[in-house]
Amino acid sequence: MSNAAEAFAAALEAERQAALRADFETLLRVQDEKRELLPALREHEDQALVAQLSERARKNLVLLRQLLATVQGALGVANESAYTASGHSSMQPGAQTAMSAITTVRGRI
Image 1 (cartoon, rainbow, N blue to C red):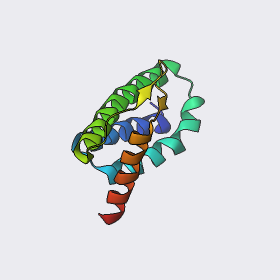
Image 2 (tube, rainbow, N blue to C red):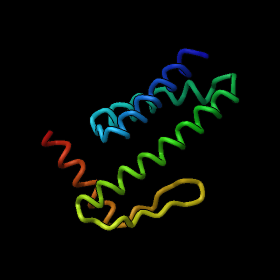
Image 3 (tube, helix red, strand yellow):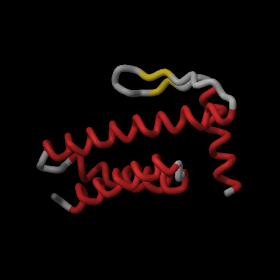
Image 4 (cartoon, rainbow, N blue to C red):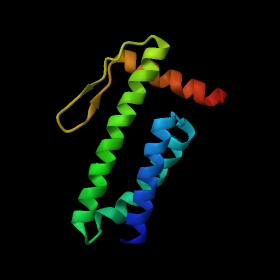
C-alpha cells in the first residue's frame, strides 16, 4: 500500500471513530486531510485498493448521516435531507439550520 493509500485509510478510520464519538473537531480535521490525499489516490495504480477505500468512505458517510440526524433531533430540527442515488445531498432549509447550529456550537467549544 502506498503512503497516500495508507494515510487515506488512517484518515477513514479516524473519521469513523470521530463519527462514533460525535467528535466534530476531529471530523473537520479529517475532512481536510482526505481532501489533500485525494489527488494522489486518483492516480494510484492499484484501482482495486482505491475501490476498497471508496467503499469504506461510503460506510463512513452512513455514520455521518446518522450523526447529522441525531444532532438535528437534539436541536428539534426535522431531518429533511434528501439524497440522490449517487449519494449527493440536496439539503433542505431545516438541515441547513442544523448545520449552522453545529458550526455555532463548534465555535463555542
